[in-house]
Amino acid sequence: MNPGATEHSVRRSALVVATMASFLTPFLASAVNVALPAIGMSLHMNAVALSWVATTFILAAAVCLVPFGRVADAIGRKKVFLTGMIIFTLASVGCALAPNAMWLIVCRMLQGTGSAMIYGTGLAILTSVYPPGERGRVIGLNAAAVYTGLSVGPFLGGLMTQFWGWPSVFLVSALLGSATAWVAWRGLQGEWTGRTGGQFDFVGTLFYALALVALMTGLSAESGYTSILLVVLALLGLTVFVFWEFRVANPIIEVGLLTKNVVFARSNLAALINYSATFAVTFLLSLYLQYIRGLDPAHAGLILLTQAVVMASLSPVAGLLSDRLEPRIVASVGMGLSVLGLVWFCFIREQTSLVAIVAALVVLGAGFGLFSSPNTNAVMSSVGPKDYGVASATLGTMRLVGQMLSMGVAAAVLAGFVGHASITPELHQRFLAGLRVAFLISAVLCGVGVWASLSRGNVRSNDTASPR
Image 1 (cartoon, rainbow, N blue to C red):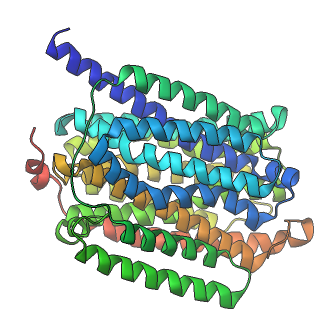
Image 2: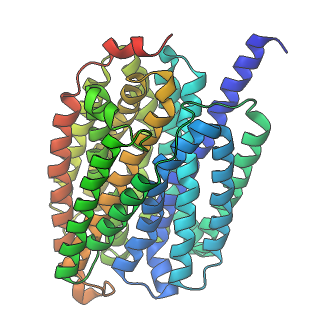
Image 3: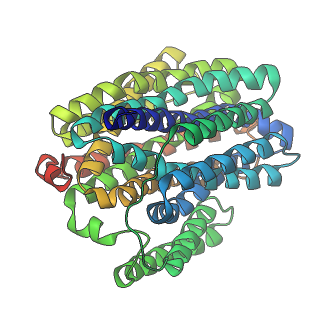
């Protein structure tokens, strides 16, 4: 096979594998959100405990993502990707067989660990084999796969939960994981590394992990004093972590990139804020549609499908636009639309028409679809090839920490308004009040995100950082 054909084959395989992986985890996340009421009934879990089914996955992924990004840069991104896909697949089987809540949460933690190995390598592999002028297109396709997973997840998850039970959601994910691992093993020829050498930052990793665990535990704690204490400890831990990262020779997070590269720093901040503001929407609306409106999982999933379909439709277009226009302009317009959609949800009531809910989801989906691809393009184009793994893992960390914070806010609001009790008709009004507060907090956060997106500066001047 001639060198040109080999290069084309590797690029095609990388795109297929990264796309399959990008579809898988959001598919599972959105499908599980619809299945949560059924899981709660089966395993006797309240609303706050159900939030941990989603949060444990995100927390484990957030803790492990940057460290595994470092490991992948050193030993090879394909090796770490394959290992992560295998762990994810086996953990999915464990979730399907869970006899109780603790078993399920532990398996979700293992799923998150495997996902961290996938998150930290898939985009880095894709960026390694495509030149800067083509990245917007393939990143757009990759983001479209994410939103396709989000699109079909609620509907198919609802159908599977209604007709075959919630374990079927995890079994289908295990089958998809097996197929992706096989394609990666057979189709990805060669290996990709980045920075090598140096000691692994175990101390920084420990501070980082403990701070995130304390933060999430504190946000969902029932006792006010315990919650405040854990959040304060988390903030202290994160402060120590940042100071340590400045001193250590081989930090797990390149603080220098965040302090010296304005485009990189502000783009990651915009991602953090955007996910913090929007991720819990599906979780909260799934509870609203099934508990308050009395819809079955399939019909609730069909309504939630709206947002993700719009995301998937606009994401490739936004990626192409970011190759021609400044990514910050496209992304900032998207963030502004997200603010509008969240403000719309601040007025949700028990009698709010389903048409109004679908319309708000369309606006929110359009906002996120216009934001994600250009923002990712800006991050990856603001660094050189040796930092692709670190940049991909850092962006993934912002995404996962944002998702974790979003679920943390949702859990804190539910704990404050409903407590650690099941959502019964007597608690419907308190739940609705909490829902409106959660959406108001998200809208304010997203408004701050518009500033972060607009103020990042132009990425075109940084194209020289990556040789074409």
